Image 1 (tube, rainbow, N blue to C red):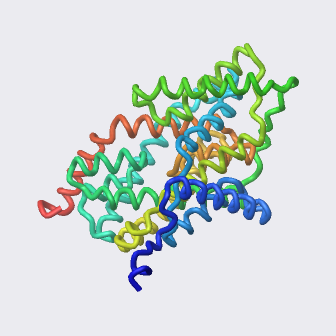
Image 2 (cartoon, rainbow, N blue to C red; image 1 turned 30 degrees about the vertical axis):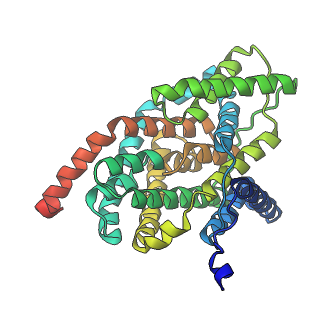
Length: 362
């Protein structure tokens, strides 16, 4: 009995074993999803299986820097198609991007008012838990202002995972193929050239990090890819196997994010997060109809552009459906940049509205 009492159900314990377990489960999830013809099998399969494993108490550890490497590969692949004509067409959407960003800010603020009574959290926690920004950043800011960082992290993890899983399935099931197919380069780039370019991608991402640029591991390689694609100084192609590996690493990282103890400790927060995530997806679906009508973008592209989740996952979905990846990327980058720059201003507005509605007890 004493020996059994010392056993920790949350095995394995050693970091290397946790890393190997995550890779094995992620790969198994990818193969299983691919065999079942699940859309984006190599991202959604690993995400689902790793999330289930984490929730059962199995400790998983994503490979260090693996998600960043996956983002860099996706960023390079997207950047290579930012030829001048695509860039001009994307810049013409700037007014729509600003309006869409304001729409997202308003919708997430409304969701904070919904989350607060459902989760029984105070206003600071509710606001930063629903803000359409990075989980780590929002948890830190919430803690600095007296909020519950754990509750913020739980809501963001559920929102990110649910949107990444649900939105691609909806787009593939009900959306039309965009028909945007990028022809392979006439000359396949050598693996040496590709390796050198990927090293430069890492350098570009690291250069952006000190400037607090949103999502540098996607944007840096994307800018480098756009430079290469526009100047044609070298021929670079990203092989499909690298895109699969990128999806695998991203899926494992997202699925391993769940903390079983934290989620079971905050059941009301989990319930409220599920409700508000559904509201955000519904709002994005309705907003996409307006955006599509106003801009001429396809409905599926507009939906991905407004989806309240990570830009990398939405861009991967757009690429798989041959949609306008440049537009999806631009809308998300505008949203991330504006929200990062105005989050405290928006929080001040939210506090004033809260006091006006609820009085000093808010």
